[in-house]
Image (cartoon, rainbow, N blue to C red; front, side):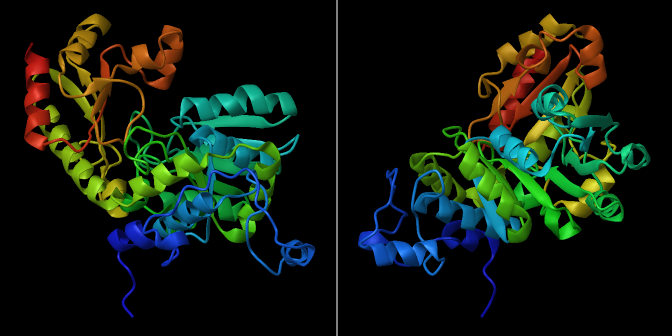
Length: 391
């Protein structure tokens, strides 16, 4: 039988063909606890003879369905859903790291992930080392006998640097260190990191997977063996998600491939438009030949996503803010990956209270704009940016 394509998996993977009461969608199971008909029934569960739910902190039918769907899309054995993307990475690292262990980050990783490690895991004796993104020699030099995890995003946010995943995984394997890629911006449509040998894949499912700016969720994907302890720790920490959010996430995933096709198209077309505009100084988008990571991105990725970062020529922060304010279709907001286009100035949205030296170190300039393309008409988005840039 022909193997199901991604679009078919988006709709059907992970779901029982015949559901309760004949419902075509997975019903919402708003149950904190699940009952047993008899002690014998309970003993079958306790002895592992029957797979079912017991208590909401350890699992829910909505959660199981959406986890199986995401695992299929990511081409992994297992996926574990959390209350947010940050909860997912915290859950993984709290399981895998102990006092005295070390972790190495590429320095363009999401700043809250790095902050959790550098400021909070440090209180428990875990050392975080950060090296220049894409500098594998520096990464290898930072590894020692205490190193337990290598971490990167691909693409990174907001500079959209793409990592050579084959080399990244090889460094980990050569040093017997596990590897984690935050592939939120890539999505399973454009990239599957485990196919390159990466151990764990992280997604903020709030973004492209949910796709409608109406839920918060995160997911860690990998092998059953490596994630068994992670799932047990999640049951202890309790950082689960709600049945209703799981219903929304599963519904969003059914249109995932269709949305990604439009968002890939919008991202590339707008990046090309911006690169040719006289008011634009630089465009960060891996689908452009001018991007330093273009060759790697073209070799690894099916598409390049809907996120674009660009800088305005000869503009200070206020002049840049005026362009953001002049846009009429995208709304000013954090996050990305939803059907609505969003726009923001990283200086103001995420780095306003950082010192100029810190912003320079993070590569955040006063004239930088980040735009997340939704699924609106491409020509409408281009026309809107044109009027905003010339207003």
